[in-house]
Length: 434
Ligand code: SF4
Ligand code: SF4
Image (cartoon, rainbow, N blue to C red; front, top):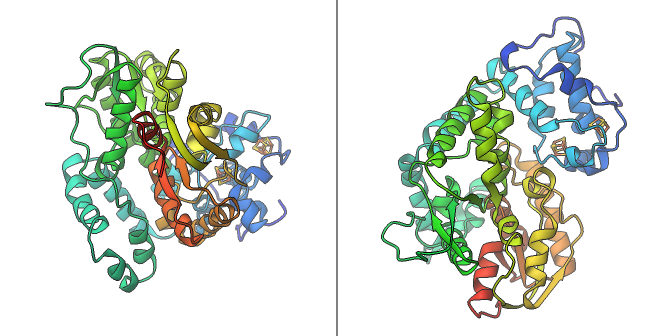
């Protein structure tokens, strides 16, 4: 390695939670070619080997072989990984980097070398707030009220540091949370489609869900949204809480087994997690077939629309910068479909910005855990937007959406930030995109 990144080497290293250890065959797959390095946002910012995919895998190997201890320095290098998985898409050897990183973090959860309280707080929030719909609804209500408050601008100016930055990123146009489809007289006929509603999406992006339902119906779907579904568990798995992520996966599989049709997702992170349930439940007796059958039904919104023969015509007179969500482009391999849907709109000028498929720095809880790196990646997006001067930035993931609201402000632009569903909904309803 070009840098030891402050790692103590020796022969005392050992995985503290062997049942969840990174698989030796996953680690052995890396041949150190370095082809992933320039795809890695943290390597691009720091230039440090220990902040690259290859370096982080090597650290895991050293710990596995007992040649390094699981120190705070090792934890720090893993913690700064965005889990964006751009490295996986660039890797010619098929290294399952995301899986390695989740299992490495499970070791940190088992024996944190530093920041025990902070880890406990994150685990508590993810289990007891994010994954519990009623608790999350109560917690999100003040944020939603603040987003629509008329004195919001003045309040933002007096809020300190990171709190002020978070407040500035809250979406102002999302209205009420999404309460499901009961009592709604939607399309009675058409192909049955299940909407995956998620956790943060449901509470803070109600309008995106309502736009998604309208778009699906215009494309010929009969939309349903089972109340039995739960949070997808992506944030829990990324944190290394694999046991809880598996509980959520089983609950979701069971809930959707009682439904029919595709499970359509409008959040890239959730979609990637749902499609990877077979991997998450690989060691669970009796769940492989059920997980595989469920995953085969999961479709990103753009993927489902691209599979339809005829779509409504629409108009969106705007210069649009589409930004790939990492878990859509790198994990699900979906890049062409959203662009094709936008290009098909009359008046839509699609502009490609530098680093459109590089992580924006949102990455789940990353903006809270690693605010410095998150801010630097947002600043780079702001510079790309300032150069391209779009009327609208379009993306398909809630975390990215919030980060782009901040980037657009940093760029000094008046551009809107829209979910792809909102852009299509507006265009298909006859709006002109402004
Ligand atoms: S997941 Fe992203 S940040 Fe992490 S090592 Fe891979 S490319 Fe770098
Ligand atoms: S591209 Fe793949 S094999 Fe090469 S260094 Fe990166 S992770 Fe290892």
